[in-house]
Image (cartoon, rainbow, N blue to C red; front, side):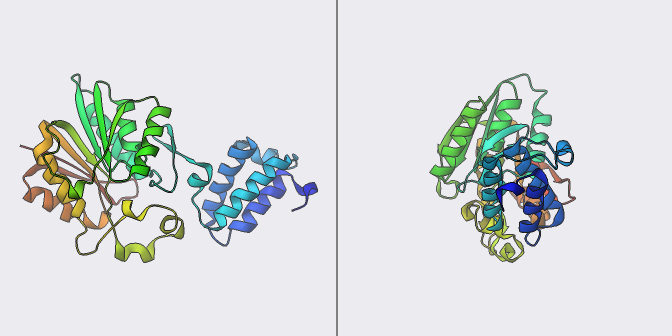
Length: 290
């Protein structure tokens, strides 16, 4: 691309040309909006009234470099180093999952359940990753004390940075929930929440390269032979660690909604609610103990 061609229109055409064979048309449009907003400071509503506007050389270069990374299927959030979640900005990298809209729905469910509370609440997020669940809860639930665990030291570094950037206090700890003694904590929690690994190995064939290449597999996948391994262990922990009238929340694999409900019933949980996400898929569960 020659310097004389660096107009908003030529850059828009460039983005479309390079990405249209790799991404659906609607996604190309969304990526284009993000690129021009981030690097050129042009809001979506302004793009088409700015078509003949000259683009500065550094802006064109940044867009071209980002497009080159998008061609390798690297997620736009990792290219920019950030993702939006529940009205906040979170730093992300290859050590954490990119926060998903479905997880925002889980967070909103918990917040709507707990906001009326007037007493102090103790919350635990297991498998925190970027910290998006724990930080959102700490930010939006008054009188809350939030702890968050993850097996990955690198993920915890990201989560700690996000807590600092969003001005909340969360107690982070490196814990492998599958290999920990359930008695490691004597604390009683009002809420235990987890969005653990739940994608079966057999589902890899249906997943896009931007996930398979760039997001941590330890945070994504479980063996087909035991898809509920994390849910079962966390439920056992919650049985010992939930305070009276406490709740257990899960984000789940849509294929195993009924199986997860049955597992929780067998372990003695009651008032089990299986909720669908905005796409109509079984995605969230809330349960309590007698």
